[in-house]
Image (spheres, helix red, strand yellow):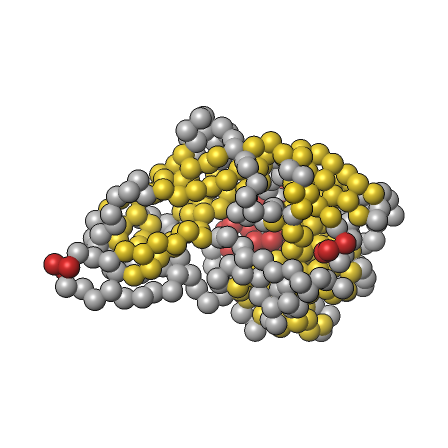
Length: 355
């Protein structure tokens, strides 16, 4: 069983508070950063009929115990004290959907059972963030999360979600950034490699944030001089908004001072926060098999008039070199889609991303 003594706070946001000058005679107003939402964390690949673990994260960044999750095949799960739940994948290959109250959804593919083998890592992100979960692909893993012993920089990491071929992991807090060893140990053996751990921070430069005035926040990267893609989201845009899109993606400068700036504007008094995350570069080649499974599932729930477009994408995927064209077609369909259809299309698109 999953250990019930394990509890973790996921540090996803940096919170601030500000009040306007007294001359403005505006009463400070408390605002709770973020939205009332859940995030379901699934391993990106399951094995048909085998054990797996999922996790649920609440809006506050904590792993969420006691949350009911409905998954394909009519299974109803309840997260335990660690915010995770052990389950058995459906017995046939395809796609699994997980939902909370019919509102918050996630999807993953179910693959046929592979031949038994030793623990081995086949997909490791070259750069990971101390603030974000990351995915390891391989073989010989255990579906019960705590049966996989993952270390980053010789420090035990937390396995949030697991299947025999994929793990979703969060590093231990307070690891210094830089190049780190990474290992996975299970009953099937041990596999090791290296990766680069970065730490993301936000800086306001000591400048006051006042209503209707624009300023900048600086995203700083420690641990790598490589230019990286990062995403910043204002969790309370009614208090402080990001100028332009929210969330907003920016590219850091690279080099010893590896930073990026984001333009913001104060709106009113209150608490506010930002979530900053690394956009991890994809590892490996496009996963055409996963994309096909997502598109097959999307075709079954496609609105009238969209099914033919999905079928056309499936036909094109018979030629892997057409993956970029399929991705472009999916982008067009995503612009006007919703519900499970959107989730499945987006999952197919992500499967076709290239390094």
